[in-house]
Image (cartoon, rainbow, N blue to C red):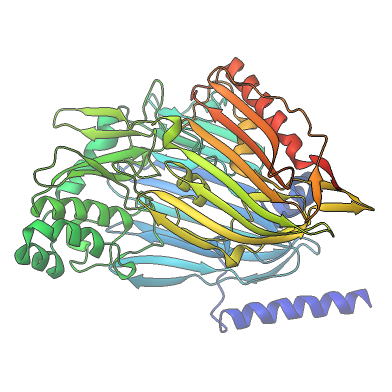
Length: 616
């Protein structure tokens, strides 16, 4: 009976895969024995998915990257993934794209799905070659599977004429990882510069020979969320045979200069019709979605001017650089800056892979003030600084060398996050009203992750007690000059009635990004100082009053302060609770870290705080 069941399950899976690909021709590149041997080993070694959290449905068993310099100056990169899952992968893990430009070459060695129970091949997957907007790529689409499976994908990419071995590899992913291995081979005696910002204690092995091979290994990596409050939080291994900021930035400057000849018809019309308003019209026009290729990261795809379509669509990097040239044509004073993933304290790997994206600094004709533009982020703009860039360090080429400059972090008053509850309570303990969020400065970027404003924040904030329901999709959102306001309808149970008395709990919100501060390392730096505050206004039922108010701990001195209090108003008919956390220190030394943790601990009691109320 079990054999029949296993047979039908496998048949159903094979059928679903065939239907998914419309019976595309199978690819069988590499023999299966090596893969099955690895799968058997990992089945024995790797903890179950539940060890990484009850909601974990997939993980990376193995990720390997091998780099070497060929005799003709080409850089060859071989990459292999083994991904185990027990349910359909998320869209970002199901859709794989391998772009190539110019004379670059991509080879898909294998793309297969295996059964980790019977240790057999389920089915091969068929890569497809695609072209769009002047770009070419290979694409692998993984079917959604609801049973345990292992996805194996390996590929290699060759970069002719590179005469360098360089890259920026993200170490942390949104999936757990059991084993990550990176091997970088350079000619014997050649230098290699690298940086590992998140953990300076990461060591490497060096195998010397005809080639010197540097090997880094990372074991049992938990999923990594992005703590946008922390400066330099990007967890990358970045390396290059060259060193220095000039080698990182000058190739980008040369590439950007070569794009000046690209002027779309619409831009020409804006400038010819009214040069005074042309710059504003250009900024509005380049925001059109049909002009942007959003599937490709520009650090991997940098096309030559002859390969870039004059009327679009463009990659995010191309769009930003082209916009700089067009604004200059409209009479604006524009500078192109480059935002690095990290700013190493010592040796700088000399590779353009150091750069996250280009940033514009521009001023209109006759103005003395520069404004910063981050076109790759759905930035909420203040007067001069978008929400994505407070406290960030930018690089710019001044014609002779590369200069670094830090954008102002602002003051506490520039970065406020307020949570305001306005509720009315019934005699049965039911509450109804609104939850209002107000955020400005750098907070919109922290809360929305650089994406367009959206309503459902349930994944980044939790509400206590759980009996309170926030109707996330019914909220109303507005934005004005960098200030974001969202109002949600809420309802639920806050009171536990007993005869003529009631035990009243207070609603509370907990934010993932604030809790992440508790796991920061001593020596970390915050992007900006901030103020977080909560206000709860509760109107009691007719005839009820509050009594026996608790005494709450506060700290009102120093650069890190917290304050909490509960008051009664209107002769006890309205209860108002307030708490606030002020952080006016961005360098996290040991004393600051302990004080910050003490503040969080003091505020955590609001998750279970309750007061008695009674009928008069």
